[in-house]
Length: 168
Image 1 (cartoon, rainbow, N blue to C red):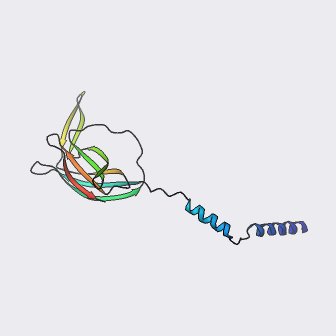
Image 2 (cartoon, rainbow, N blue to C red):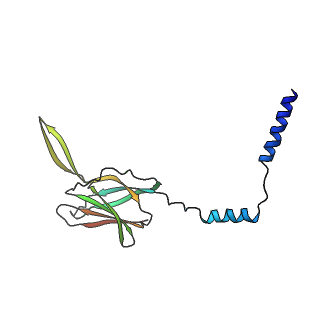
Image 3 (tube, rainbow, N blue to C red):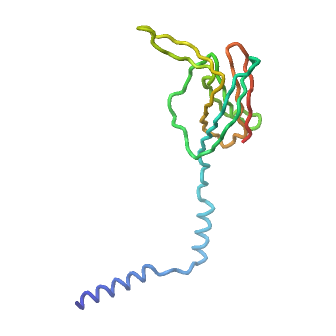
């Protein structure tokens, strides 16, 4: 039993000696400040931008009217996957700008012009359906310098036309 007390006493003495606080000296203070000055800078967090829109066909047959319903920035990064190199007869092009400098762009199929594929007997047919309105969303990897998003519409019978601009 005495051995247990002795071992406990030795462990307590060693433990309190190991946990003893140390008065900072001028050399330890300079070490701490030099480490803080040389600390790596924290990288900015990658962000995604989700934009939800409603788009309507213009009655006069001109370019579509697009309205922003909701926008949300979240931390995250898009997976690097297959790059879509498809071209569409009717498309929307989304540009990210830093003032007047183009940073990035994406092209997507126009939400009012859908190609549907179905079977007629044993043959597969494709037909185009035109909608009067639709809701859709766009997901962008947001560049830290982006301060504006511009959306353009390209219809097969018309030239490229800006239909919306969003300040961030």
